[in-house]
Image (cartoon, rainbow, N blue to C red; front, side, top):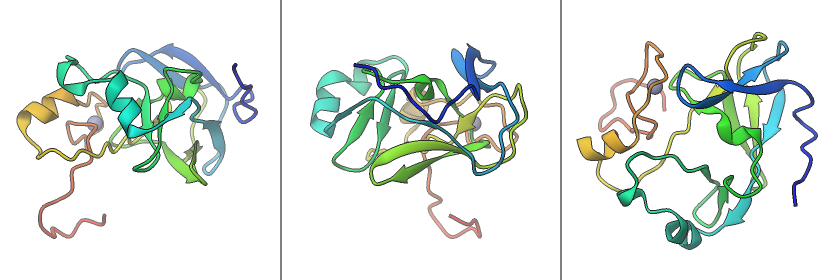
Length: 163
Ligand SMILES: [Zn+2]
């Protein structure tokens, strides 16, 4: 059963992306702070997620998953909407907002008609950060401050960056 999303009223469309695959583009100017779309999909447990998807055997990470917290993951491969096509960027124009466990994508900048929407996936990973791991989660966002991976990498020491 597909629920009609009321938040995306003609603000976005799917197009081939310069970052990768299919992307989501603004078809109108979108103001900073505007809620654009809910990240919908089936809500599953991390155990179910592991049963469905095995990162180790996948050549490239390509599932539509959003980890809400340690108990819930949204699998947008099931009943997902356009939000699952929003690409990652290390210098994004959108952010994901958690409202009582429901995820919404909101504009964190003024976005011009025709711009691709992006947010920082900031994937958490328990494994130690190795080159192999980084290769599994590459980033092609092209931002000048691209960190080269969609994983969240925390600085090991205080280097003055604001976390
Ligand atoms: Zn990047």
